[in-house]
Structure formats: C-alpha cells, structure tokens
Length: 402
Image (cartoon, one colour):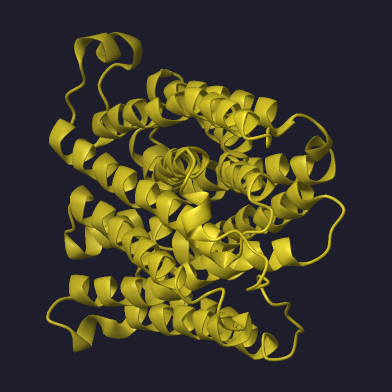
C-alpha cells in the first residue's frame, strides 16, 4: 500500500516544477493523472477475469517490479522518447499497471485473512496509503527544497529502491488464495441486484473526491493560497495526508464498532463542506486548515465503500474488488483531469458570486483551481443518497449493514 501511495502521489509534487521546466499546461498535467488512473482501471477490468483463478504471488511480485521500472522511465525517459512529455507518459503507464495490480490484490488478500472485524482490518490496511503519502510528501518536499527542483529525476529514481525491495519480499511471505472457486459469489450472481451498481457508483464518486483533492492540493496551496513550494508540499499536501491517516486509523481501532452507514453519510457530507471551504474561504490560513480537515473526512469514503461491498458479498473473490477498483479509478481519472481543464479555461476569472467571497487570484490558475474544487464538492454530496439507496437495496435482500 505504501508503494501504491508512492507512485500515485509523487507526480503531483512535481506539477509546478514540470510546468515551469517543460512549459506544460494545466490540462497536460491533469492528463498525467487521467492516464494514471485510466490505466489502473483497465488493469482492474482485466484482472476480473484472472485474479480468482491464479495464486496472487506472481501478480503482486510483478506489480512491484513494474512500479520500480515506471519510476525510472518517468525520471530518465526524456532522452529516449520523441519529447520529455512522452517519456513522462510512458513512465506513468508502466507504474500505473503495477499500481492497478496492487489495488486489485491488496484488499482481497486482507479480506481472505481470518479476522474478527473485517472493516477494521480494511481500514487499517488503507491507512497505510496516507501513511505512505505523508512519508513521500515530506521526504520528496525536503529533497526538492534542499537540492533544488531540478533534482526531481534523482529523487524519483531514489524512491524506486522501495518497490525493488518489496518485489523481493513478496517472494517470501505466505499468501492465501483469494477465493474458493467452488463456493463464491460470481459476478453474474452479484449483477442480478441493484447493490453492485450502487456500490460501483459510490466508488466512482469516492475516487473522484479523494484523488482530485489529493492530486491538486500542492498546486492549490502554492497557486491559489500564495504559499511557497516547500509550504505547499510539507504543510498543505502533508496536512491532507495526515488527516487521512488519522481518519482511517481511528476507524480501524475505534469507529468500526459503530454504524458504518452513518460514518459514510457524515464523512460524505463533511467532505463536501470542507471542499467548498477550500474553494471559498478568503483566508489562506483557514483554507489551509480546511485542507487538513478534508483529509480526515474523505478518508473513509473509499475503504468504507469497500467494506460495504465485502459485507454485502462476503463470498466474493478478487473479481468484486477489481470491479470496485475500476469504478474508483474511473472517478479518480476523470475528475482530476477535469479540474485541470477547468483551471486552464477559467484562468483568473471567477463567477461574480465567487469573486465577492474570495476576490481574484494573483497567480495564473488560482481562480480556476478554486472553481474546480467547487465542482469536486458535488461528488461527496451525491454519495449521500447513493449510500441510502444501497442500504435500502441491501435491506430488501436481507443484507443491510449496521
């Protein structure tokens, strides 16, 4: 899960350096996120056909090896492709394939391990994603500050040591089979009711919310709030990551004994409100605080939806988690790219009602980033009725989740 956090979150730390060094547009930067999660989505869909039929070891070893290779290609592929951007795109595709495999395999491995509280185990597993995020943010931010932004290829290559070590480690650990082929929920059975489609919709919205905030936080804090690069990385981006760590560890240790649906409703509502606060608060300090709080509230949307799915389909194998991951990646691919598109086209022109609240940004893209966060806030608000419909559909089938 740490490796997954690494390959997803290292590129956003480089948004502004890459834009300045290579003259990239905000849409091109957002397109890297689109390709990252679109590739993961395709891998997720392919894995629905094979993940339950093979042992997870070869796939998870391959996942880590591809993550390492992709980081090297991104860092040093510029001289071997038609343009530096093509090298970045190639590296993104390679490490995204590895990330997609990790995403498909890690949750069902945890689900297959005997546990007294599956939702708590799932929350703790997913807590290591923001733990990895914070570690990557702090170490990368400090390295870029001390060595200069031009050192980014060296920094990215240095991080590749971790997936190399993980590749070797997964040769050694015992791993369970992910499903009993003779006693499991098949996709055909799961697709007969409404629950699966509502779960997929909820995952798409969760992915759109979490990843858009996460991927654009560093650029938002630097451009829209006017803080320096090092503050944007080490305070803004890290605050969001620390908020996610706190939320997921709390749920894993304490909150999993409560009402999961209620936790999801509250998390979705507060995620939307903090996203609006980031967009509309005129005070940079308060907007920065809202960034950290958004991490707490958004932290349960993705693993919480997975826990709802595991409770609804307890005999499902990796194919269910692969479909959920594909839906989450679809939202995670489209909304961050749309945020970049909104930022480019809005420029520094806000709607009149937003100008009254926050004024005009001084940096190019400041107003557009704020507007993009307003659009992002729609998704967690829309999750609330979806979760309610899901619980009603589960109750009709005798599978309501408390």
